[in-house]
Length: 80
Image (cartoon, rainbow, N blue to C red; front, side, top):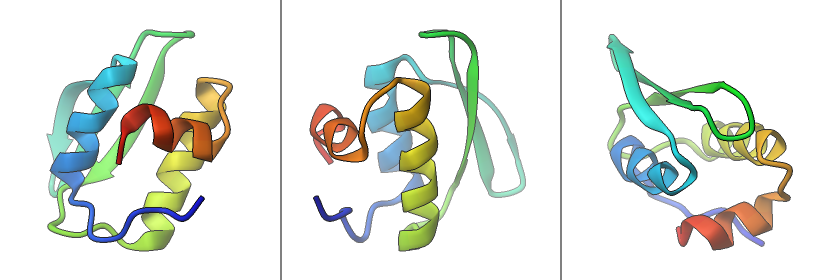
């Protein structure tokens, strides 16, 4: 499955709320979100208008690994 293009950091953060991620803090342009599902997990999301595809790929791989999902399963769950 192909990763979506032109996804903003805010849009991705909103989609990750479905997996229990909540905003914890921000430093500069990076927002930190944390979930307690399946153990504690932190993810930093750049607050940019459009995320680079490599950044998006690494965030998706990290979140998918924490929730024991594949990236395509994660994308289907997030409806991106």
